[in-house]
Image (cartoon, rainbow, N blue to C red; front, side, top):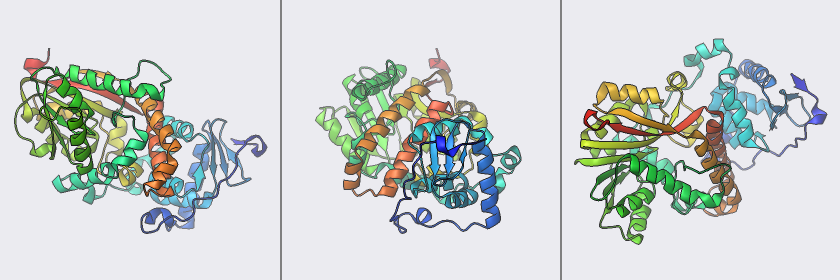
Length: 426
């Protein structure tokens, strides 16, 4: 339906000026799009938005679509339609980066969209996804060289950038809170609670030979070493390895924990326990068999694997696994969120490992992301001082809000999984 424009308190902000065409070529320039394609995109979008619990204004003083709810202003409808008509959800994100649309409560708007994702595109167009959706670029495959480049593009941005919005543990994964709403001061304890649950799940204690795949900035390695474990942690991020090594030394655990710049496929040895926190999302579907085969190869008899993994519904994963997304283009190149069923299928077909327990806690990730997003927004001037321009800041804000909305809507979940072979499955 179309609502009265006089009842919607929206004001326009000018589209972001000065987008660097060398750094952001696809944001600085509107894509070439035929009038017909733009018109079709506009018609599809108007139809979708009209039925959603939103208040979406098309241009300053223009009509407002939706049935009521969070407000969103599409300041430049023509540019918005061209981008979405040409590049789908990638264009949707690039339009936000360019300042062509905005919302007072971005997460609320994105949560509505995520909750109605199957309704946004008409069924006939969904069945023709292979004709209009962009395919993942082959240069972003997670080969040994490709994985190194993909990790570098995100995790080597700047340790100082991540320190601006993470808590003092520098833990970049979902925390586990005691209750909601969570406060920022509770985040370090909530991150330690998450880490301790994983270490307990893997049975890590005195003398445990522990392999950590995906170091982060070293907090889990330090906590495991303090339990008496002997920790080998591997990462492909040079920046993370540098700081994690320093933090391990500062904690006095350098004799118990080491960090290696190494791909999981290159790890050798035998370990009583393996822990990997939100690493599988970076592996890519093509390499899931390789990843789980490596876990099976490296795990000693009677050992246990503890994973923390972001997951999505199997049918959505299967429908979109070959689609190139805005998140892959700008935030996590080469990544793909698996389903729990995909994990179990891969384990059954390629390893002797089986899932013996699964604990989901998606709402905790929504709260974690909210705290990160609020901190990032508060520290915008500090982000700019590090050399990150306005387009980057809008991109990162959209990434955090987009992710938060995924968990708030239930489109995404996060879980801790215990994997074991038959002899340790009890």
